[in-house]
Length: 244
Image 1 (cartoon, helix red, strand yellow):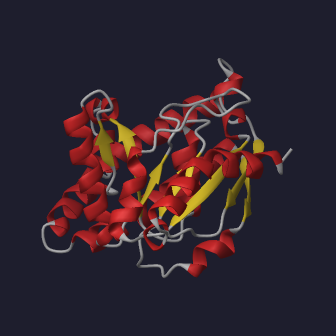
Image 2 (tube, rainbow, N blue to C red):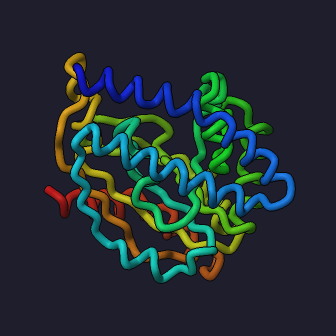
Image 3 (cartoon, helix red, strand yellow):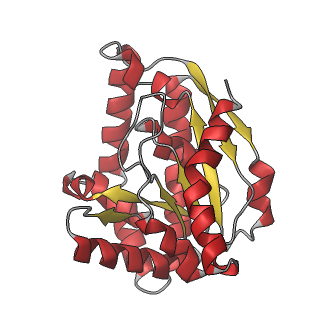
């Protein structure tokens, strides 16, 4: 419980006292959006590493060399299973390039925190409004064309079960239309940090992240691309099974 309380204090203090930097990033984004994303990513990455140290989280990374196959200024669409609030924190902490996320629209209502989420290039998706959802996907496509990577959890919500939830595929077109690669992520043990320990708080534990090789949907013909999209849940499931 003490770890959780200390972590919450750490987050609140950082978010409030770093507001001047948020203003700087907002001004910078008006002239150089990619540089603004890059500076925010480095800043937030340092903050998240500190938070993970407080939690005592040990991270095993597999397939990190697959990311180096993609130029660092090229956007990647990361697709992963969704286990925990720490999914985004850990992926940000180990990313080798600026990384935003497709987040639920509800996060946009969180005071101050949502500003930093947006500074990273993250977008807020309304899954109930098809028209607004399409606008978000199109905006994500434009961001990826500019070199930003985006993280997407196709299950749509955190899932603590043994089986993956059905994948929502609408966001896949961001990689296809921006001619960017997809990298699949298998996240194992992430909910052991917090969700499986309520109400005791943060627990020291080891988690595993595995990155697949990059896939390029825009280089596939229509039939091959459809088959690949259908195979994504099985590919991630196979990666998860290899960690057991």
